[in-house]
Amino acid sequence: MFAEDLAPFFTTDGFAVTASALNGQGQAVTFGAIFDGATEPHLAGIVSDPPPRAACRRAAAAAVSTASTPTVDGIAYTVANIAHDGTGVTALTLREA
Image (cartoon, rainbow, N blue to C red):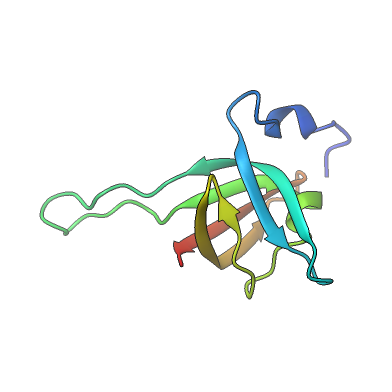
């Protein structure tokens, strides 16, 4: 993991949007996430883009599990996959709830 402070990349003053999830104690945790939403399928549904994803700091993703239903930019999702990239960033693959 990098020793750099990744917090500036995930502030809502820049590219990040507000995300929230319940932690293991049932408390709401709010954090910044860089959201990449899904788009409409192309070529009459033959080609589709990847599902929506949210990248966040690994420390923030500690509150998220595959059983949780995070809210990203005001929309409720379920978590399909959690992928840590080894740099301190975690990618959450999402499905609309």
